[in-house]
Length: 362
Picture 1: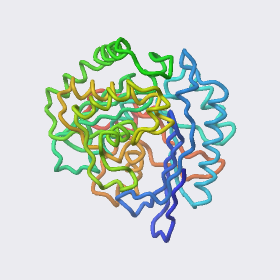
Picture 2 (picture 1 turned 60 degrees about the vertical axis):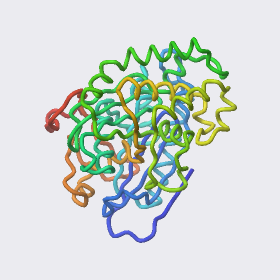
Picture 3 (picture 1 turned 120 degrees about the vertical axis):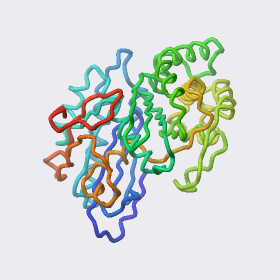
């Protein structure tokens, strides 16, 4: 999928390449645009979460797909005149036992060494993006980000979170680990999944519930698709249309999803064919999270990790109002033989200040 709106630019084009469980997503923006409107957006299907081995290893086919997607994305970035780019991999590669081998092969074939950010750092950047999207008037804020590999939760009063957690409760991960078929889920499977999620989430959910956030935002394609299934506006109506999700509607959606085989789920409003297999588990995780944390409603936020990374770029930070840095070094100029990488940042769970440059892991 590709969408380009190059036009005439006064500033510089920069990009971010997000290699995730299902797609390699390239987003290009202009540094003069604090709203981070997409100049170009493209997605290359990967579906790595469906090919991962029982022990989490990524096979050669996965590595080949990633390398091809990175090469194609960088070629597109060069064609557009992108000057700087940050490329990173998320949980499906970060948590693979053969992560280093995969990253080394991709670098050898493309010249790009994918950065790997700790999950808590991803949560911090996503929180920063969500806060900028919602505004400071949203008050104390909690963030839920349900990906293929992990569930990220954050809470804070300012631009950066006071608390972050990255939990191995991603919809794709739990589907792979607990559901071996493509049919409806049994009541025993649903109960077992709820119990598993509750056990892994309880401490984090209790913390969020005790904070009583004024605003709760949810990011990720999983939440977007569940909101659409529950009656929210389709994505074609644009990112500024309000979209909300409550536990009552989500419970009904969960019951509907678990009662259907994968092929039938893909025919429901908002549920894509690529994510239909994990949709039922995603609904269970989302509903359990909201219930345990005492959340009555979430607002769907279109900004997430990609926007959080872009907000760290000095040129965008200068255009936007006082964007705090979490310690990511400036993006390097993009060139075919010089990978545009930022270093990984240290993990954090509860944080109230940004790491110093000396804390940054190379």
